[in-house]
Length: 72
Image 1: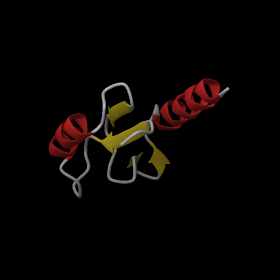
Image 2 (image 1 turned 90 degrees about the vertical axis):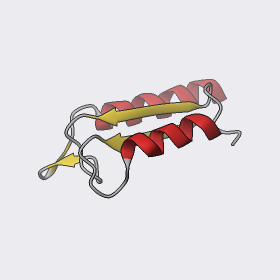
Image 3 (image 1 turned 180 degrees about the vertical axis):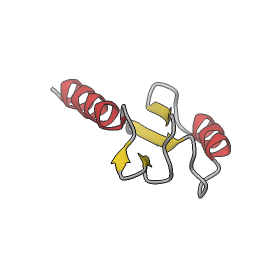
Image 4 (image 1 turned 135 degrees about the horizontal axis):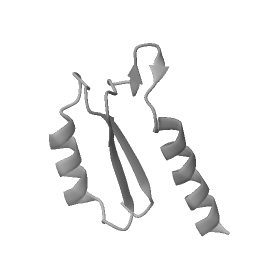
């Protein structure tokens, strides 16, 4: 993979094995391209109840802004 990757997982995801998925990504994506976060209390949709978990939108926005800055 030769592009930046934002990988977001919810720590309470009962669909995806979070720890194993993160481990695999760390082995197949170059460290300088991988931005991996496990968000507290997040389910598979990165929500807790009806709302997104704290830090989800901020993390997404920060990643996108960094990519735009890097692209010039």
